[in-house]
Amino acid sequence: MTIPNDLIDKCERNQYCWHRETPSDIDVAFEKLGLPKTGELYIFARKYCLQFASESIPFQLVDIVEDDGTISDNIYYAREELKIEPTLVPISTYEAESILVVDVNDERVLQLTPNDAGDAWISEIISPSLYSFMLSHLP
Image 1 (spheres, one colour):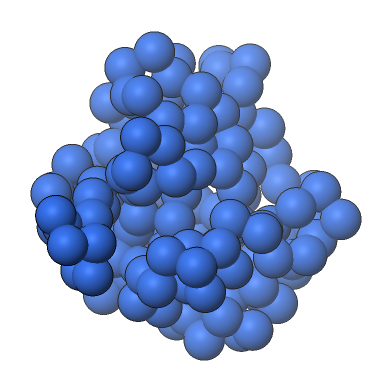
Image 2 (cartoon, helix red, strand yellow):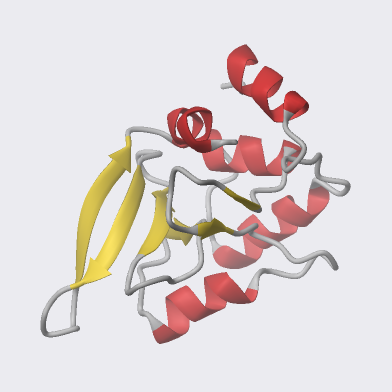
């Protein structure tokens, strides 16, 4: 599986999408998080940082690792405080009681919102894949 050429072209032309300096940081993060080192999220994150803002979505997208190579606090917050299952990797901040995640099992991008009781998540499919999501929303 490779990144589609049209997405690479869009990323290369975009001033907010930059190359990852140390792809091995993603390898280490995925190992520590128990995530499979396959699929669109892994392949994309090894090449590009995920952090950018888009006018077409009301979320700030965040990267999986910090500048120093450590796992993003956003991931720990999602797992420990929000109790989001480990196969759902957050790609946004938690805004207005919602968060965007990638399901590593099927590549879909989901928007999670707590139910009325606040004890479970309601998921809405935002995109059938990370690549199609990025093509639609990368400024």
